[in-house]
Length: 115
Length: 114
Image 1 (cartoon, chains in turn yellow, cyan):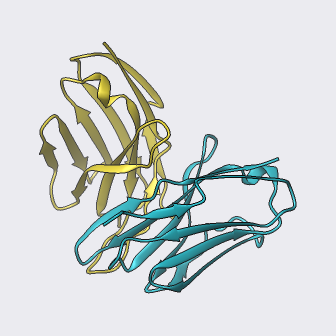
Image 2: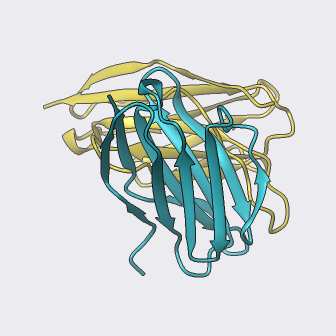
């Protein structure tokens, strides 16, 4: 089955700096890579996702890059703000057609943005 | 839409007791997922359903765990008998792949078994 490794487990940055979280996956068939943000005591919520047919996707201050050959993908947050403080999870899965997808999650990264 | 609804939000029970967690997916979603979250093991998929039919239950830890989805708007996760190591936050999520692959999570049920 799929195995997703996520690093670092904790990350502390100064407000305004950039943050990068990296994940590797094991199943070369995986073609869908979402990132979820979980604030303390709240539910995970999707912030961005990428499919294997593109190498990069951006949404305002957030970007995700994918290297299929190396089987790794990364989340980049620029101009970090205190409200970015949360736990971030990467995930990988295989999607096809209208079938549902089983997500395998990484272990999570606790991001702390210091004002 | 109110989103995915879970009940109860908190459950405290004694070891050996039966626990039933409930989930109402978003209307129109045809996939439902049950996850467990702990500090040690992170977010784990326990089981998922498509159109009320269980598709993959390989993540269910033991026979003490069972899940059902009697109709499109209701699912239960039951633990019988409960043990202290079952203490975790249990999330239900739903999705509609024909609309997109995002899984929408409920608020979770925090289970404490003493």
